[in-house]
Length: 584
Ligand SMILES: [Zn+2]
Image 1 (cartoon, rainbow, N blue to C red):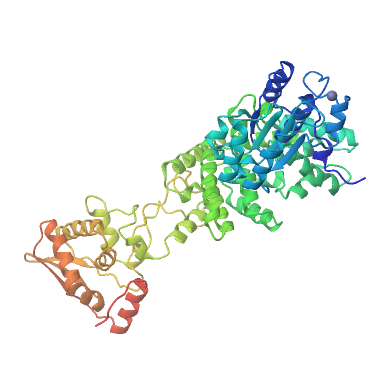
Image 2 (spheres, rainbow, N blue to C red; image 1 turned 90 degrees about the vertical axis):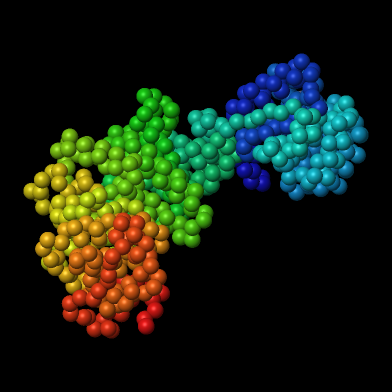
């Protein structure tokens, strides 16, 4: 005997054997029993939900001599004749016969009366694939159908059907089949063919069917061939879905901010050959279940998962903070949307996991709230540890060069309104402390256990305080020049707000300000900066900005020991690598 797929072998032959779609079945049965059969139907709905099966049952039922409760009896002469393929029931696949010729042919043949029963039934599958001309030809038939003709148009995309056709059809919408019904159906089939199965395995297959009976059965078929017994492992192997426990481990780590475990789980899952897209879907599905487990009182019933899986989800949900779940979901949904536009999906996924596992890397309010909740939780449990190292690493990775920090585009960099901090950061003497941001804010690489609870971890690193590039010597601040520094601080703030002033800003940030009489004198030790700042365009830009803060008398001068010309150029090149600089 030729192999028949499960779906075809167990295709329902009566309305009562249909999996769900009761609303459609009821209407059709009533029409048959009341003898009020229409001439044109449009069956719409997702694939594998029973459109063609119901069309076939209906086609035989309308012809049956003694229909039983609206379904074909299967016994009468007509039922037997139609069962073996008959001229009276024609199935047309519009995906392959979509031209005007086929529709004209149909129009001609429909005129001949049925051979065995009362009706000729035309089932046109994927009807949205017809060309415009073919639709027009079909429309002519639908406008004046012979009394013995019934058309059943089936489509997954009703929006592509012309309104003229739609208005002549009775539209019946098929719905996705709930997982529990799919499971029940699959179990009944497995029992019938005598295949042993695990509950978890059946649940996983039903889930993978995603509301489609046909999809579920074809997956089940592959799993049945794969192993003697239908086990959960076999199903995972066939589906290529990441093993649930591994995904749960990853998501749990992500939600409890265990970056190491999260990233290594991603590595291990992907190294088994799972695709990034599948893993991302698995993670999102798990997150949505965690949300349900966290928020709904009857989550167990809603999720209808095997007990063991549900308890695993529940324990992750109990440990995770609701906002962290929400934030992770948002980040990953964004990533899913972006995935088809990126050249390296893996990096996108890893970045997303990294962000979700690490609210410290974001400065938005959502991330901050997640961090605060996390800290509160740790405080409550007495498990607060200082885990600052990854944070500082990430900060460093994000801000590779001091120049970038200084660019005006950096939103998180700002000068204080009045000067002290600015001046200290820029002009305090002693090069060593200047290179480091203030002590309590930047977390230590290795957090000593006796460190006070509150100090390092909670605070986000402050706006990176710009330090002069290491090559530049620091000019000591002359005592009693605060007013010049205040003026210069105002200048720098105004300069920062000026568009495209990044390079000028960087060069000016190493100037030293002092008054000589009425003149605000800005000094630099660097020949190159001195030369550059005296250039016409820079000079004019500075003039404008100084004028804006009420200073008209200023001068740029060279001071102290000159670095050699060569090293100054190299220094400038290293600082402004991607900015064209002319050396004259
Ligand atoms: Zn019959």
